[in-house]
Image (cartoon, rainbow, N blue to C red; front, side, top):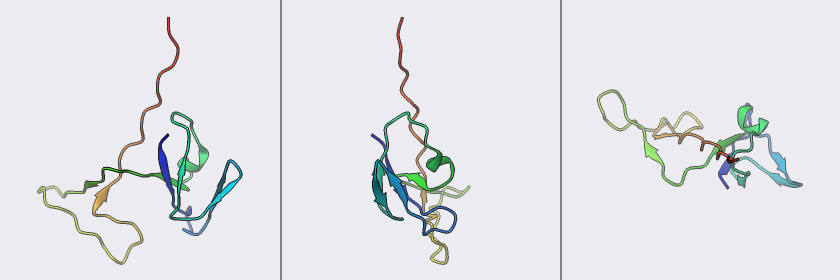
Length: 89
């Protein structure tokens, strides 16, 4: 199952509830693969990546993190995994 980090939504302080358990911003939650969840679209969850990829500028140099912002610009977000195809003949 993919792991997601709770971002806290637009204000950065909102927690979420999944399967009866409360998760606060910064905590990690697992959601079934291929399941579309409104909390991902609304920005309350962000895909956690085990293999973080460093962000680069147009010249190929690493991008530094801006300490004045809450997000880390030094790493690129990994794309969401594609849902597995089901079915058969």
